[in-house]
Image (cartoon, rainbow, N blue to C red; front, side):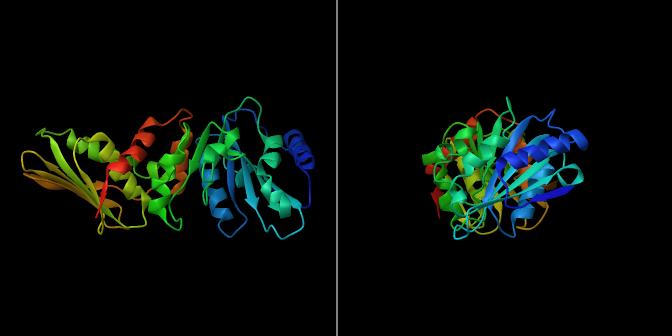
Length: 303
């Protein structure tokens, strides 16, 4: 069920939420967190809301979508409440801010935060330079950005280290979870030999590839280089052997090749945004591995 409330106030929207709770059985009990989504009022808004809805099926929560509209318009708040089948396992409150109101997101968000419930903020598009210092970011214990599809993704992800605060993360990091697991599993197989170097290759505008390189550089006492080209990771060992994991850019199956062993095919598709978001919502504590991968980026050689 979707209820539109144009030209409204936060008080009127909260009153409507209470009415729905009494008459329709839409409750906030059992919500494990509040997810605040800061985005623009654009054609991408529905895809972003869908991703949050799907993630909420694993983490029942209240989703507050703050969509900034035109700053040239008269100050106005248009709200929309979604419950039931239109809200996954959550209740969704969409707040569209126009005019000067678009510069006061935190003031509009605060009345809808659930009491005694942790807050997570997600910027699916452009994120503030320092998420932890953003007025909405200050409300959260976890702050999620996404360097993918930005104007300069590589520069975006490299810049995360300077602004890093405990609780920050980026979906480019969760997009490589399966890659990290596969690489770790393959390296654990005998023969065990020291890794002398690593090469990570992929699209120039794919920050997840940079995160793989940063993760390896942070863990290995060996040089790591980042190249632009086909998608693969190659590790060279002290005994002369190599390990390569490669996958077509749009494929779902990777090939694992290792010296002296037959090739193996493994499932390794690109992760959807909703899956990455759901993963990040599983933990509310700081992600030290992400921080270490960002630091590792400073050691990577770009070719």
